[in-house]
Length: 317
Image 1 (cartoon, helix red, strand yellow):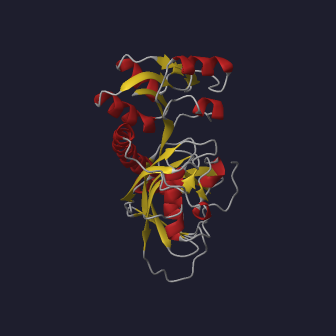
Image 2 (image 1 turned 90 degrees about the horizontal axis):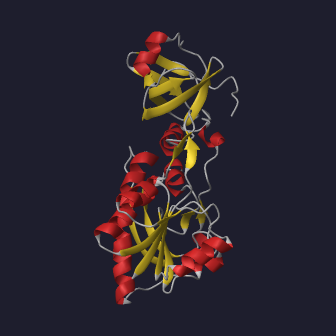
């Protein structure tokens, strides 16, 4: 089968590598255009483009995949299958109708739960205990096509969006190859999604990282691990932005009833903050214009007083 691969992000790389290793006929790799990145605005390629270049595959980087020029180019490739993995542009029905057999997508959730751009993040933020990969037949409605194949995995208590993505990107590659075997053998079955069980996973906004200390310690812990690497969880300390990278829920018994956000411990053992319900120990953090560091080092260099309320002064999002 002749395959056109659509992908851009780090998540998509193992799928492309799996196709190459399995010696599938990848006639073209479609990825996002090169963009300026970083402080010095150097031109950077997508991770998928780098992989495609190493394998000497044909590469196509349209600004608009729905343009007449793009459609004409894709039609000329005479593809049987479109494989779409974290590409970054929405495909029109005219584009989806191009492959002779079907377009399929590798999605990082157990659909219909978490349709959208940030399924891994929202699974963690919401405290889910399992996630997975779903292979779907692509339709015009985002992530709503019938399910081709699905497999779940457990979410570890210490998983972050970074570690969970690494697990799912490898699982996605495995399921993609299984799906292509089924398509080639014509022994697959498509199952419609249950629209009553749909949960959306919209793209993260910066404000999703703002810690509300009135929430429970468990909810804040889930938030911290779910918003990595961006926007990251943050609060304020002395009117400055304070990012929290690592934390854990702890049980302590203070001799008074603290306010939400109150620092109840700040020493070499770490920083413990009272939440709306329970207590959170901050293990790694970074003050605005400072370096990322363990909390024990932060305590040495800053006058963090017991009874101080984090987040009391508003910050600009």
